[in-house]
Image 1 (cartoon, one colour):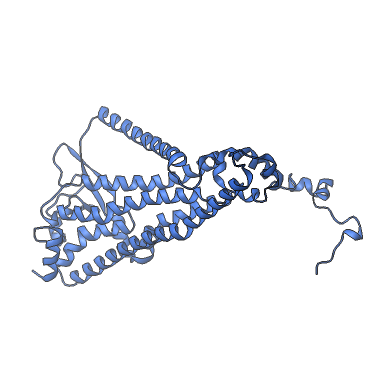
Image 2 (cartoon, helix red, strand yellow):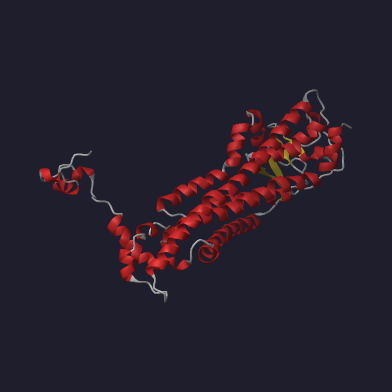
Length: 383
């Protein structure tokens, strides 16, 4: 056995690795029911087409191909495939973790400090020593325009933005949870050659089993990081949105945070060769399921609705707990300035004119809204 084969044997399993070839696949039955006991059916589950999916493909197909290549050139092909998949996963994890770190320390922390400074100045200049709000001081307070641009005082808008961001991250969390569940549902095999099965009808390959070490490494390098980054990004995004000092920035910050979510897919499309991307797209999990009757099928469909309802209820509960108890940006009593800030917005941030353009054109209201100088004294030449 080669040195590479010895190393992989130690890391990924106790038995000898054998590369999957066409002859090996001939021993398996073809079709969706390949290799399954009678009374069971097979269900296809897509492997994610991103950096994590490329890592799964490398562990189940390319590592055995690299260690004991059946044909000339198979070792080099397996080496290139593993190198690209491993490097892609490493760069993806480094970039996502680094961006999360830098966003928090150089963006979120600065916004938190800024919004807290505004609120501290407001408390110091508009309240008396007994902690009572002074209407007279509020009228003359110069920082009220900046204060009223903090989004947290408008609780319906604040909750709506948190809800939209949490929905985006719930998609990623559900994908991660489903991937981990599918990894655990794939049965264990003893021989690495048994991990893949090929359908003779369409020529597609399916992951039908894992060795114990292969599942372990996929769980460590794929399942845990994917779920962990999604949860951290959910919390970090909520923190950033809570510290936003302008209403329009809420939407922009949401879009900016979503870029981090899509980084694994961007790297996948930008770095991997076309043939490698097609291999990841064409390979699926083939999971065993017991053959069920119509009544059981109805029960499982009902259960899926309950699961989705559970996710939604959990999401709403998280938003409520975060906004009222977990966020550490501002105290929740900022909502008491809601009426005051509404007055500021109405008087200072409303359009000068309203109406359809066809109505304003040539009408007196247009001249009233955009007046011209009435006398030479009002006309000033810019210098």
